[in-house]
Image (cartoon, rainbow, N blue to C red; front, side, top):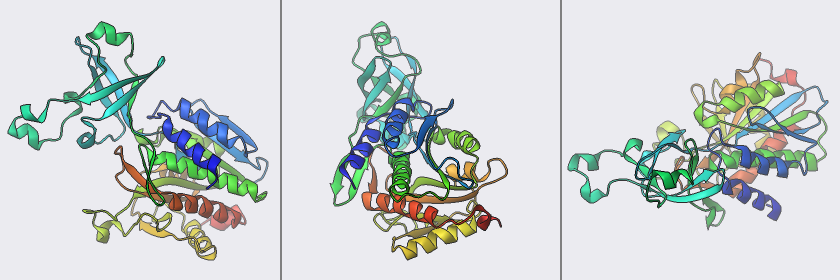
Length: 353
């Protein structure tokens, strides 16, 4: 991976982007993509578009959602503590005791997530998962009046953790779901541009508000009006204790992108992805999805009169926690598989069932 591309990924992960608050990360994504795309723009919803070959008849979309889970300030107690609510599927098991950044109009306000200490919990309370109503953010003020000078109702907060290399090609960060996917679709578009691809219109879309209902994919796909679509997200790796491979599938970090198969997926597009992977010696894995996938692929497939849709995922350990782990090799192979598959698309009619 080129140094400037790795810096792009670091810049994406350094931003906060809970659903509905993606403006800053969108600026980062658009700023990098405009260095190779023919056209970059946004919309009223906050989606970001990178386009090549705009005038071509066959329209192809790639999406990755740019939002992450987070916390929202709901109220301020008389003592100056911030009461919170989750934005998206935040795991209450893992957030108590974490350091956080509250993102305000004036900048970051540092704080910690507090709850009653274990010593003071009753035996029954120790057996339960803490509820969000039992937690708060402590920003070190003396009362509500002082807190209100720093934060406002509706400000969002994210866990204060860094992007770091663990070992070899494995990295850890908050919010790889799905900032690693939106990075991959940018890299795929860059590969197409570098290879002077001219055959079809291709639009990479950083979609917003996926974590609260695939909302940006609905509006973004409607705007693009594609014939063929690829959603790129993360998926659960089953190479950790406690996940049943016999039901979920044998998905490992480092073994390549994961291609979904099922009713959410156009079977001809699935076959083309697998054929392309084999032809280019790109490692890949397959996961069975027996219904709607809960990803942008759902929204893409059902937009307007329907879109020939595929889902390609990057394996991810510890999803929706502050320590998500992915393989950069998987990420690069995902971008390569997308680009090579698009190069192999002849005409949109080939995917009519």
